[in-house]
Image 1: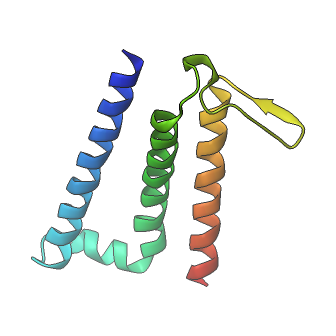
Image 2: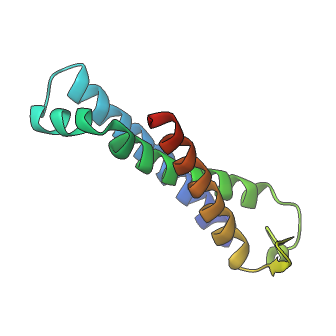
Length: 111
């Protein structure tokens, strides 16, 4: 049951990405919502980078969790910094690390 919910979450994630992409195409290609376009052009790394970072982090963690061959209780368990991350702490910690890495890269490239 839990794996079905994870597949459903990843499917909803992909649909959300398509809707967000359609919104971007509608704004930039067809000239819809000029107020949103001016706001996005002022800080594109905030308007595009942060949501895409969160989506990409969720996608990476979800795909790793689905591809994990270990038992249900041991999925994405790892040891780092002298601490043991298992159970729900594993995916949450991986999501935070992925998100921070993406945001750091965006901040570095935006300068």
